[in-house]
Image (cartoon, rainbow, N blue to C red; front, top):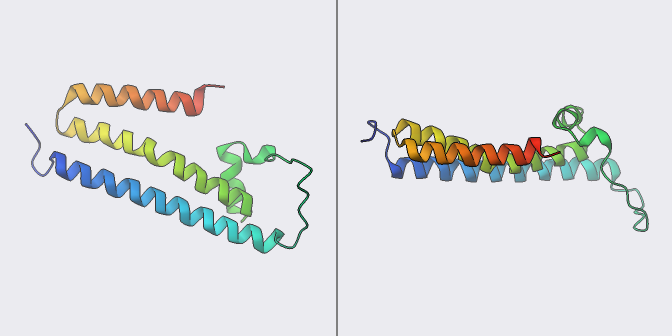
Length: 126
């Protein structure tokens, strides 16, 4: 039994649109960050013999958002990568909502378990 207006095809179309939009948005943000980064640092010589990892400020979501708001090219690139990582997580969360609307509780339970595993691997596995 499905709720009026909701069916498997509509759910698939919405999820497909969500995935395409997330990937395109992430690509646009990364490209913008690359442009900003090259505008500020494109003239600097590159030292390939020295490895410099990401600064501590770009290792947390708050630091990335703060840096992106300050128009740091590296932070904007990192923000685009966060959007890319968040896209499939949002897909799983939306699937759980869609299954709940359709009252398919077995799939809701399975999807919520998958979402919990994803969130644990992203946030709680330190």
